[in-house]
Image (cartoon, rainbow over all chains, first blue to last red; front, top):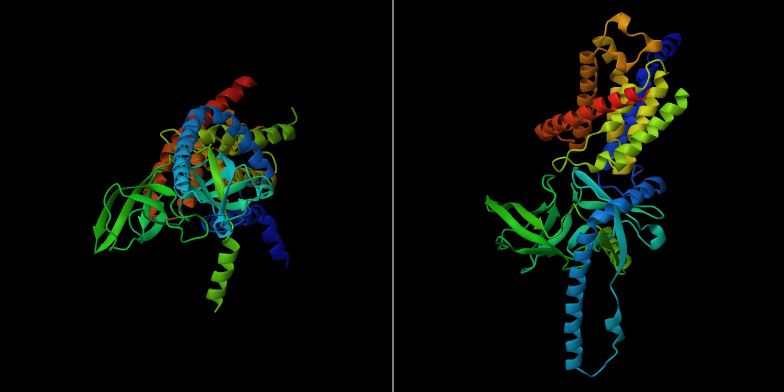
Length: 276
Length: 167
């Protein structure tokens, strides 16, 4: 007994060091797995507050880019709206069909207050939290494409698992056919992602547009992602399909959070199927 | 000034400086110097080692909270905090380590540089290894360690010079 006590006293710093190092490694391993509500995240009062302050200064340098993005989106939406107007004039009989009024998605405006793109596991922080109705596992997009999925949520802030993260896998498909695959990132260039698991039957060429597939409850179908930059074929399968994003992941300001009203219903249904 | 308050301020100032300034530098698109390890270099040797280890751990964890990196910075900073004393003992003669009055700035220049360089390289190597977490990425890790370390070492030397002039 005396010897054990002596041992502990003699090596107390080393044991203390081992204990803390063990804790740090646990946090690290946890951060490398796809895991919701981690202990160490920037969606809390202090880190969120400081990121917000810093961002309010940085924002000025990007105002021009953000304005152009918003202008582009406005024009696109106005074009869609004017087409719709024509359609409704053509069949001018007004029918109020309540079935058609079932809204599937709603969008919430948010600002990215901390953006990362140079690490291997990147996260963003946005300035909306559970007080504004944000939940984990909601999609984040801007006018030019997808950005990520919400991860940890606090009262006023939320972290977003960026598409520039090894753990991120997003269902996407070709715009001109219904073959789908997953979007992932190899950690190299922050504007080039990889499309994996695309079946060989799909005919692709350089410049084909990739959009979201809508096979999950997170992103609606048809949100633009990017275009095919290059690809290689090996052993009768596609290898390394590189996708150039429409977005510039280094300059992201205003974003929309997608809320899917049918999510709970779909999840219940899918759970029931998997339990049977 | 009271030592406790001084190092308390240094602790928070380094976190803030790292988050607000140095994490936004992005030399060549991806190099961010990690200046916060300055804490381990200038924290006095005579203070209790347990407190020093705990503070290093918390400082690293503070950085991790901001950048969502789990415990990467905490693990690396704690490690160099632990090896600091053995390293100094190895670098210096016995009579040079005079605990109560030991001051990094009074070290001979070459020894100071090697002390800083070894700590920085070790720290950055652990950080990038934990970030990539794959043996296959060893060349990327070494490359990034090397480039980032150069910038960190230059910044640390500059800050030491500045702090000396301030006295």
